[in-house]
Amino acid sequence: MRLIVSNNADQFIELEAIFEEKTYFERLNFALKKFFIFFTLASVSVLIPVAHFILVPSFLIASIIGFKNAFKIRNRLKIIKSVACLSCQSELAIPEAFNTELSIDCAHCHQRYKVEI
Ligand SMILES: [Zn+2]
Image (tube, rainbow, N blue to C red; front, side, top):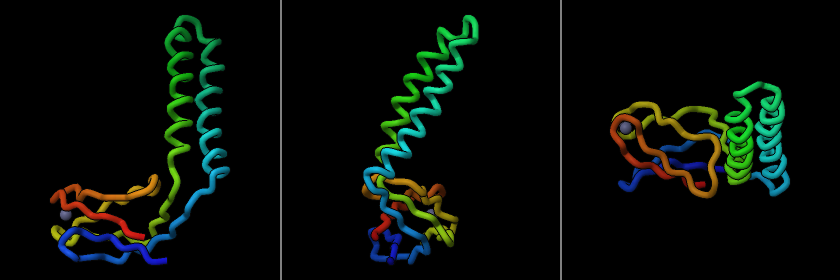
């Protein structure tokens, strides 16, 4: 599989990475793990006097948000070799998890790149 990081000026860099597409059940499994981590923290927080009024609702809300955000992640990239920006040669920070499309902004010169699979 070939991954290409490109900008609008028809320049591209070949990205050495492993692309993984998660199935529905893998995404559900990952999201449920996130949910139960925060749900467990909420359950343990019940035992803490006074602070539990803030901690329990916070962890319950975090469990729902964590589930939704983890379930959205459809694709993962395992970067083998980092790539440098074509304009300023600084290293591009490529996120490892994304939903459908992945675009990257260079932190230094704000050049926008799109990852094509
Ligand atoms: Zn740059």
